[in-house]
Image 1: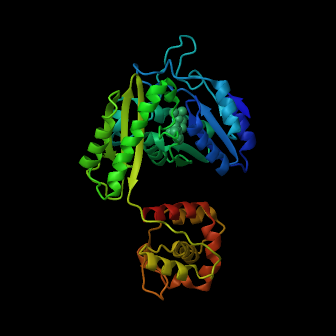
Image 2 (image 1 turned 90 degrees about the vertical axis):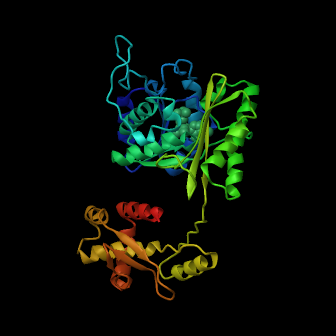
Image 3 (image 1 turned 30 degrees about the vertical axis):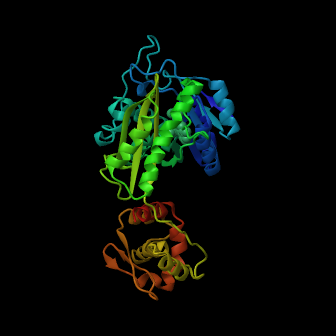
Length: 407
Ligand code: AMP
């Protein structure tokens, strides 16, 4: 494993290895634990070269917060990261990141990334002014330095994850953001570098965070999804541990982070508490979720027939993704675009409006592209011959997968 402290060193190394390698990136503040390990191991499984950054970011700490005492141990972190399969550690200091003056050691003013206000009024942001702008600024800088294909963030920091997804979207950063589930101790306590501050007794008391979230989840599973009932359950359960001082408990939309009065499809239940001097956060995603069943196989194997029957019997929506790819293949043919000219195909797919039309059996799923019903035209042998090559293109997949997720 290689360890770099300078942007120059890291960039030179990555330039030598970028080529056909996919780069995964896990930004951290160090004091690594198995929660970080789960992100790193996922990155190792999904990409060829994994960079882990270790930077205790001064911009995200308030004046009264624990910047000075935040645990730091680069050597132990490097060993752990290596054991999880990381290829590179990037551990710059504040000078290298351009936020400290070389001569005076004072903080330097810096170009800041300010997330949209609606994402930074509630939850932790209400109590940590400037925190998320500090996070967004350094994460943007790190993404620019590493230029990974995929970057991994924990769902434990749900507000941070929502803000980073939004900044990547708003600034068109060429990276995919993946959220990873919160890793917990057996007791339910979410792993966190700050757990090092807790005594053994406090560690037991802290398990009540997760218990309170679960109490609300149990209520939700009985069909009660309104804000008042869920938050009351959380706060009542938390009050069983007098040393846990609640800072906030909230129910918000997981993407927009706007307060929810009632969970229609999904809601993020988030809490922050103090235990002594230590601030602890946790959250749970509550959702009504229909199962998703994917059926794949070679062309002509009968996927559509089987899928439709399964959907009918289970009362699920039948989503014929193949019909969408056929819709794009049809447009490529009609516009006489060379199917190997990926840029032109991407330009076309970047502007397309595509809709599926449910039709009774034995008819196959219909499609509207740009408002036109092309249900019959997409089933011709010419389109069938073209569709695999079109579906393999990154831009086509990106746009259509996005579209399918919206459905
Ligand atoms: P930090 O070092 O606290 O900035 O965390 C670095 C990354 O690890 C962030 O994306 C966190 O959300 C993630 N992370 C921290 N704790 C956990 C955990 N218990 N499970 C999963 N991811 C975590």
